[in-house]
Length: 370
Image 1 (tube, rainbow, N blue to C red):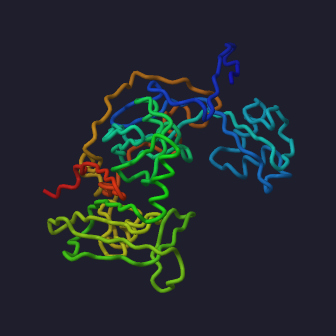
Image 2: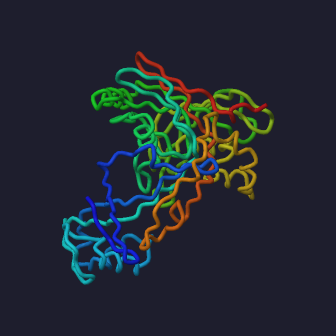
Image 3: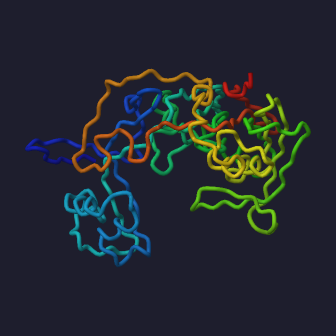
């Protein structure tokens, strides 16, 4: 869909994108080891929930989407960047349940580290890659093009592809993708029936015990806090979770540990390592309770090693983008609150194996304690 707007007396053509528009190689800007997405015009579509009914269109957005000031939503309604059922409406318009609401937005995606998504293995119906830390697997939240799926489509023309397991955004390592929905279903059936064995490595605080350790305690995930806790006193609370751990090496200060999750709960390995008294050594979310007063600066001393062994994309800083006068993020490239200077977790997926297959991923640089 194309729209025109006037800016300083000039007519400018805007091309609005939807999820149907595939990412392109030229959509990315690389600066100082960070991968940015050129801001683009995008139509967000939602359907009015029952709790939205009876609110004015401006009140709805101001109450439900607090990331922008109310004045912005007033201007967006007036200019037609917020529409109901494809029509421009007044600020006082009362929303009804199930109506289609479109928000035409100058979209800024959060940046990620500028690492290659390295293809490890290809088969007619399977693809495996080395997922860099900081990059989400698939479109979610504010991320669309800055995802493994988006980057593979833009840079390798690989689509459609179907991730068959998840890796948290800050976790690196092996990611298996099916080339068809039917192959993805076969993998998922094997996962659900417990036929697949998963192995990760982690760099943890302290000297991990030499003998195998098993954390067999329930986990409760708090979505509001974005954090899991183990449930020791109330065994009926939370979800059943079990992880096996084996020490690979230690230098007396930190240890490299093989992690084998038997179940698949949110943050399972991270919270089980915390429970055992050996949290991941750069995990700010779960480290504070075990290592008090640890400063953030201490985790950045070896950023190059923390990232991975993947190649960093070269800068193309000359690339520019259009500034939108209504955008609350312009003239910055990232959205507010994001600068891309994240450090990947020292947690890495190294192997998945099933009834008649095994896929592996190389170790990252941080796995060496020398």
